[in-house]
Image 1 (cartoon, rainbow, N blue to C red):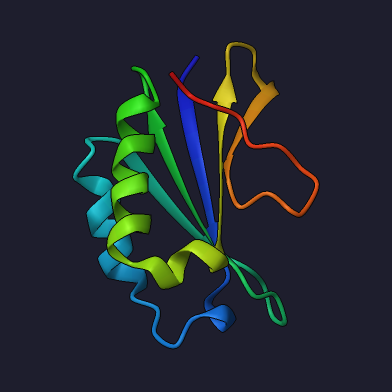
Image 2: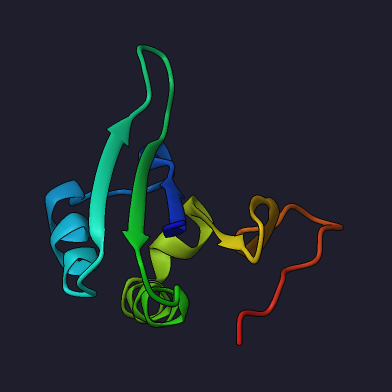
Length: 105
């Protein structure tokens, strides 16, 4: 089973959105990066990073992106597959008020 980090960005919350730049940044992890845009009227772009290995290096790379581009922090949701795939996914960034973020170690 492949492991996955899913990053959802809401471009309308940003002054600038460099979709290709983000994709290229994520590809530096060695992951297979898939980009899917929402349909008409939807305000999101999903970046899905697939790997046969651990998702931790990908998450650390995403954390660098969020640190280097603080505006992305409020426009981004990040989760990843857990030990049993999406059945026990981890919410890593962008929780709504009252939700708890998971820690990936």
